[in-house]
Image (tube, rainbow, N blue to C red):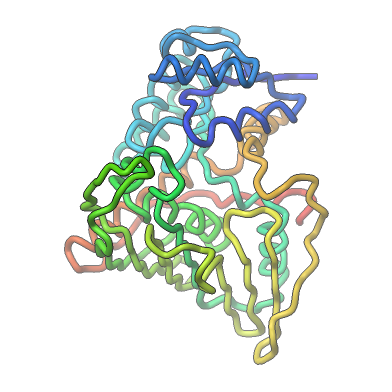
Length: 357
């Protein structure tokens, strides 16, 4: 069996979930981890029984490492991915791939120049619920889908995360808007026009440790998107309303023949409901029974590995991630200028998984 050596750069809040799930795939060998906090890396290495590299350079110098998984903070993604590509490693990056369009497209060009793979989270479209929704849309159950409503009410980061600062610095749209945007662009293709409104709702906050902090990036954004295929999307993202206390969650798809409700863009085992036009929503059975709970975090890296083994294009490509970054930066520009922004970038949408075709 062909296996690929994988190493994690960054061992923050989600790294443990990655490490635990990556060990479930026989095609993946988790070789080690590094982090700018040496003590945190040491504890992580002991907990997950894996090597700890003293720094990024030593990890990238290890010839056994074929894929670098970039789990650093938002603003470090571009620099770390670039270093990994220049070191001859394939890259799987957490989202967003970069915080600027220029940075995202530079990574795509570098990967192409070096003959390397560049993939990016979110990979949540691979979920059983999400693939079920995709098939219903693809099979024409809704007819022409003319509008979609996506809601990401992600709550107050400081209520659960030990280091909320970077999330508020990048903003809700860049941090969690990428989830529905990746699903929607995969289903309906590139976006050609963006209009967005943003506002700081709750400027002065307090960490779990009682330390006050102030935010300047909008913690609420309402964004309208028009795809090249004609579907119009309304996307709401915020770091204020909890998804436990609102009915506005997930993604709704509305077409000429019917409507579909995907309860979560993130939870692989969430509810999927369908209704013919004018009828009440009813539960739809998932295409296959999940063998996991909620989110198997290694599934995106495994998709990249299997694409390498099978010599095929990988899903969640750098090109799609760069287009999503274009949408995010266009929305930020629209907020600042109070004007719509046109987009020209494009990508090849991924196919559904084989069991969902």
